[in-house]
Image (cartoon, rainbow, N blue to C red; front, side, top):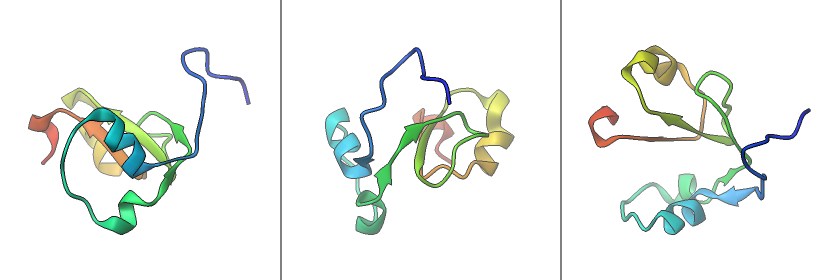
Length: 79
């Protein structure tokens, strides 16, 4: 597998530690917060150990189908 030229993977990191670094404050199930994130992937390639991003409604169907453990998105896309 080729190294990602955009970031150096320092994981795995617990989801709660990633959230803490953002400075955001919201509640999630403790079982989810203690899970480890191993990589950042796009919506279609992510699995249950990855985090992904949903930034455009053009990818709405992919967002519905993603297997990612967590998805970072805009407030208006959370539903």
